[in-house]
Image (cartoon, rainbow, N blue to C red; front, side, top):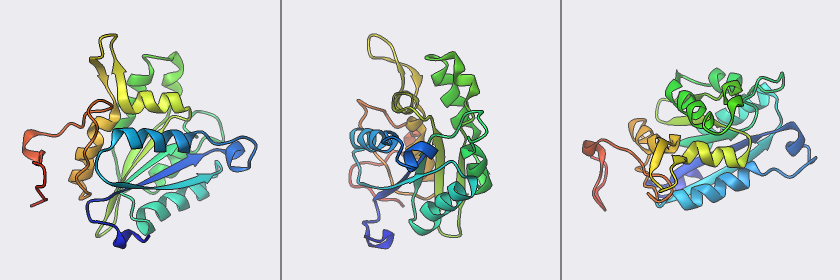
Length: 209
């Protein structure tokens, strides 16, 4: 189905797993299934997922991000892998290369969350950006490479009593998509509660003015 054939309120999400070994068949990619499963639990509004599995090649990453944003008309693109300090880790560079604006708060919060679990979180170079066209915009976020770390980053950190200790980054994603002209995204508060100012919260059935 083409993007223009989807209902207007459908969130189109690009999922991009970046790994030399997984893309060449050395091992089975775990990032894409884990992300798809998490989104299925976290989102209660309609969405469509478009998946890509590619190697750690900066030109290929850039081309794929552009395809997902410009041609597939994704509102949100989540990448996994390639954000460390190794020479083949070029996901942040590719992401910045296709950006029109950077969103540094996402990277700052991702490292803050991960530091609660591993000291090596300071080695992470994840970034988030916006890619803008004349009539469309996409939020692109680099996530960690391990499925468990992805979930921790998206959901945040909860205490033993279930209360939120550190907010996950996905809490800010729906409002960001609002601001760049995307569909109104609603989440399952048991997984991650979306934050919006009171003035931006819509009642059930209310459409954008």
